[in-house]
Length: 121
Image (tube, rainbow, N blue to C red; front, top):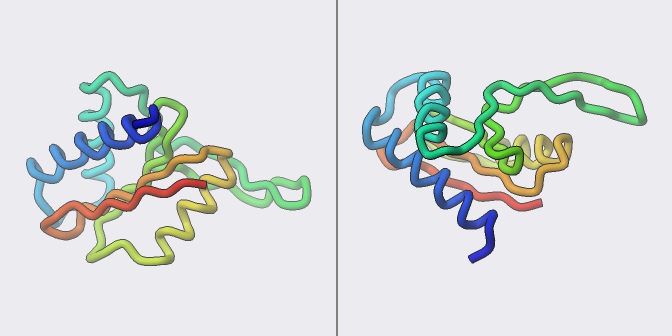
């Protein structure tokens, strides 16, 4: 198992702990805060709401904030919806492109069972 697969596996383990403790029904911000706390307890370095510039044709055309950046290696998008849909996947793939990160996770706390989508770029 490579390092990034192991890292994302440990992140998912933290998300499962949060999901079991809180269940579904909260807003994304609640899950984001709880997950950041759980990840830090597991000795990950976590940045929340980290701003990134989007550059087009050499010009900054906007900015977005990543929910979580873990160990400066994995971007994590936290959702609280019925399911993970293709728009969520496109969103994180674009975020990965803008950040030059190669590993991403979408974690959806909006249903009784945690939704998980791993993405590689």
